[in-house]
Length: 350
Image (cartoon, rainbow, N blue to C red; front, side):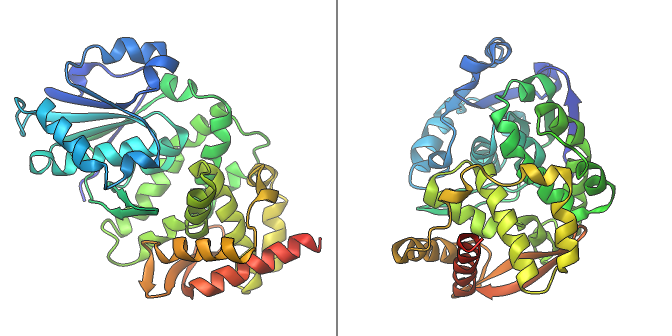
């Protein structure tokens, strides 16, 4: 897979540095929240603003979007056209998918505007649409020509978004271990400044994982789904921000790793003592993982829709043995639900 060029900049890039002809796809909230973006976007004659969120990725709504985009781009050249996408994960997935199929594939530039996208989803070349409530069922591999990490754009987010980005940062630090985790584990605060500090090494860590399995053929790349199996179900069921759901999914995976004797209890206790772990769990933790029959039935349906499913009722689940060592095991959906109940009972019993 072709590697994307990474650019770290203080401000939004000049138009001439991005290509020849353009379609700008962007989160429609940006002109209202980021004055510099509004002025910058005016240099692009062809624009397609979108409302961010999982509804944007709905396969049912996609025909209407692509029809409008084709009309916008009817006088552009497939060879010269670049789609510039500015937004978070859902906008990046949508824009990347459009770029992969429009005119049989055109150049793509990703400019992530959220920490989640900057750390994770903008990298690796995957695009996706949702089918019903099942996330990321349809997609392509279409690496961007460039990924531009803009400090001023990322710092314009509310500080609350920093908490959501921290889950993905901790995830990749657990996967690769080494100096990334040893340094991150000592941090006492969650802030945009801390996320920017670790952005480059976190991205580098993800690319090292992707390079070993660029098209998800060997199975190694599945480690990037640490925390995401249950996390995606929680995200869909509770309509949670992705980062909040993944934070809880990571905690669930960690506890289950200990329960299955994949992670030693002493290593678990050592992880919990790391200062940064105080910021892992979602503030809505006590409202999650209800074990009523109706809720478990909905969870079961969502888990069965997981794209990591290996057989009719089994999925690949990522456990953590220690930072730098993940273990991939096939588990049944019912095993996951039983562990949900066990962890909830453990909480209730103190």
